[in-house]
Image (cartoon, rainbow over all chains, first blue to last red; front, side, top):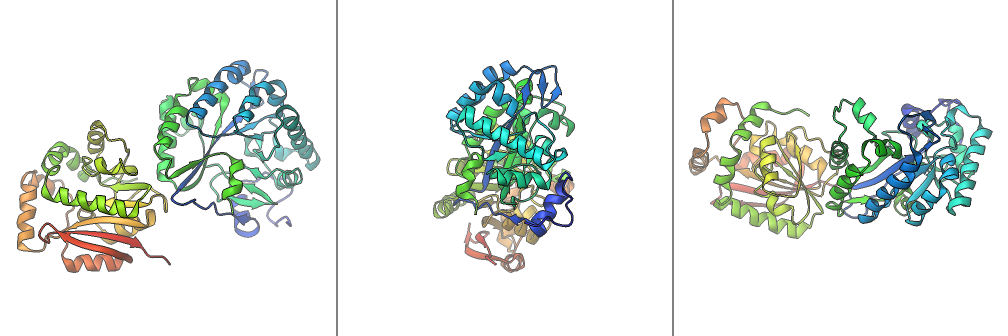
Length: 277
Length: 208
């Protein structure tokens, strides 16, 4: 695909860029509804804690051992209880240090994708550096978990047009780097946009005073009820562990979804192959 | 989301009285039968109920499909919830519904259209949300209809209705035909019941 006139090579893609791409250059995709299914939901978790840092930033509450060996099994047990598959985006460094925790995630059939190696800003890197980062994470995933990396989320949702070229060359099929546009294909990579970032600090910034687990779940429920089509919810495991260590919010959300199985489909990005046309 | 406060307050005030008066009435039973018949025919997976009130029809609906109930009055929704009805509840005005295009299989709007300021606009909005609509419209154009209206409302504080400035519109056959024509929906089945004083219509979104 030729780079459109409004995109400089290194510029971070913003909402309007994705919108213009969907209008002029990219291919907008329809996610067809299977029979009576009206809503397609993906729960995605970003995993980015190591060495006292969360997402590359110093964080007092960072406790990777507790996050990966106490919180994560609890979350997996709840997902299993409702037989739901979620999507995890894991940093390369986390995979290197705590691979045993993610072997279980892969074994249970959840989708695993890349999220940078050191949670770096991809749009600030040159094409070659981006290629190195993606291939390193891909190799690590294959070596440690025996899983082929097929999805990617850029840290901080910062990507440029070269990122998509690199992802396509390295065999990544799905990416999730933007908000509020229709799913589209960029350089052969399916860009599946986020509907909302479901973290407590985000909800707080939107004017919600209470950070109770159920409040978070209520917000997502309302979003699911009132919307139709594709809904991708982004969460961070470290934020969830900090504010909702018992996974009450996730459990209440899945409980709600279990009553609406007939009209809501919930799964991971890898399952999209069957439903994306 | 905008809510007409006067309507919201009025329905909150009469929630329990309304339920007691309407739960066993003859026209409720007829409507319940019509609802069951249509649900059996269309077999929807998700239903949006507009103006659920104290949950007379929600009681029946939630066992058959995933149901989301909306009402302008929060107290009405709380009252329904307290009765142990396992549906999802959202407070919303039927003229400004917060749902996106094609998010449900069916809409059930019983005993609500008469309170809408613009029936055509409301029906068009319904048709965007779901392809099939079950609508009940009261026909109070005859003398008998007027008497029935008085009888129905005699149990409630009628004067309060006017004091609170709640909209109420009665339809004749002509005005119903006009409404359906203007809203550009295809009419699947129209039934009059309760001695011809109420109209039940099944509407379908036009495919074009």
